[in-house]
Length: 124
Image (tube, rainbow, N blue to C red; front, side):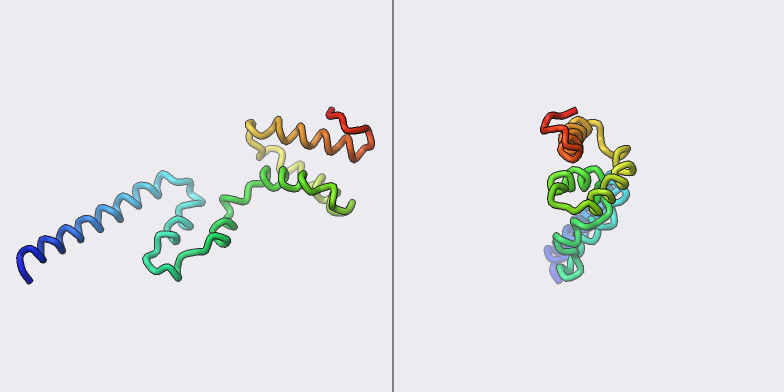
């Protein structure tokens, strides 16, 4: 092995070490629930990486407030049993709704509640 080859190998080895170190530094800045899934995305073997569907199903992305808003979009198509379950579970989701989304959520919810109670299409 020539001197240039050894130098190239050392440079590659150093670059790989820096890359691994930088990844660890970045992962420490990521929310705790995302660290392990992100590490799995960085696997060198593509077969060991999660696919997009599996990655999107991790706990970090299952936000109760988002699910509540999505359910409000389709609640008119649900039967009364599903609606009742939603209304009961809504109590647990309300504290988790960020302040930024609260006005939108309550606007949609008040309109929906008026429709359900038969008080017309006006909001509360």
